[in-house]
Amino acid sequence: MPAPLRPVVIQGGMGVAVSSWQLASAVARTGQLGVVSGTALDIVLARRLQDGDPGGHARRALAGFPRQDVAEWVLERYFSEGGRPAGASYAPVPKLALTGARKARELAVVANFVEVFLAKEDHDGPVGVNYLEKVQLATPFAVLGAMLAGVDYVLMGAGLPRDIPLLLDDLAAGRPGSTRVDVDGSTQEHRLTVDPADWGSHAALRRPEFLAIVSSDTLAAYLAREEQTRPDGYVVEGPTAGGHNAPPRGRLVRDEDGEPVYGPRDQANVDRMVSLGQPFWLAGSYGTPERLAEALARGATGIQVGTAFALCHESGLTTDLRDAALAGIAAGRATVSTDMAASPTGFPFKVVSAPLLPTAGHIQQHRVRLCDLGVLRVPFQRPSGRVGYRCPGEPVDVFIGKGGTVDQTEGVACLCNALFANIGLAQTRPDGYVEPPLLTLGSDLDGAVRLLAAHPGGWSATHVVDWLLASPV
Image (tube, rainbow, N blue to C red; front, side, top):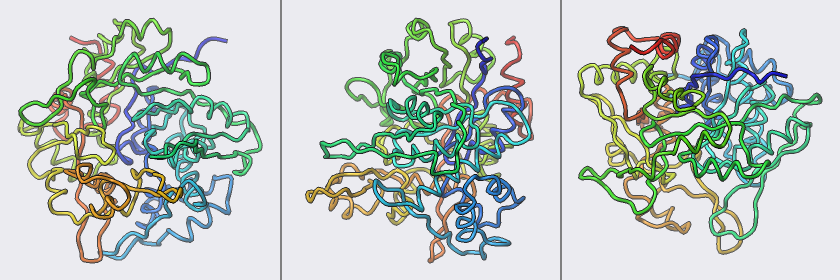
């Protein structure tokens, strides 16, 4: 049987629903890999329903979910005909946890099904879903939901995704699948398990291909050593990529602006990637036709591109945020910095600065500390032996009371709420405070500058794909 054709261009899985189902569908229809962001889709679905589900898309997907009892309680709890009253707050969703949390897990499964179902609807192009290894409490339930909708690829970064190949094998075979959960201070292994038989899946599920997002050839080689951890391919992401980055290897050195300095050790050895004998895509400042040609010439299967797709019409960014970013880029007043503290994860995070765009410092200075979404909170073992949950973005005294330290909280912004503001799902507090956005893009804005010159009114996902695949001059 011949090997399947692989995409040359992977559209990056960005933010919370910046890589929306609309964007993934548009890219997949070109024959390249459209990717939805799988981060916090439980909250995304709940808020879209509370906003009245414009177009009826979520309800259409829910009608196809194999467990209609779950679809029905989700609709009953969250759907609001005509949307929320002006100024009303969004209702909370149940938080995922190591034990219990049945409703939270059901919402994670159904929300991932909905997003992938819509991305794959009415075409046969390839669709993937991107997850963060750091968000471990959601992983097996989110993956099952995507597989129930027929996802073609699973991608995962922000950690070492050792458990995913076996999880996909087990779920595709109809067996219960599990993943590890890291619990700070615990010496025992903790796992989360999901059984496809509990979700109305009585036929074999198709196994998607798994692409591990790694920062180095060393990590790729480590995953490739054993069959049960070996991905089907890799996205090799350099330190100029948007969103979260791997920290510099070795001793941390900062430049005069306080940003981390990356060196030769932080660049993957492409020749070693070729020697692994598996497909790989290069990411981080590869979003131009010339860089694509270079990647192919060096033995890569293709490239992953984020920024150009994040700024296109179909992405989930609000129109105001996109327009502000494009205006800054057009005027040469947009810059991208690497903030070592902004993200509660502890990973460096790219932040865009431009007129009219809030900064991480502004959010940290003016926002009352509150961790109400908890997407990035991590489990830890209390002295009693019980498991608790903490986040450096919560009130400092609360975090310290859970065993955290003051220095871990310094400069931290609430990334969860900011990412929802990016896509028009910002929480409105009872006192009228509306959560502000925090935009992330890749360091290299050359592709956006060139696309803007060709399309002054903005561009579509198809424009991006056609431009990338055009022969470089």
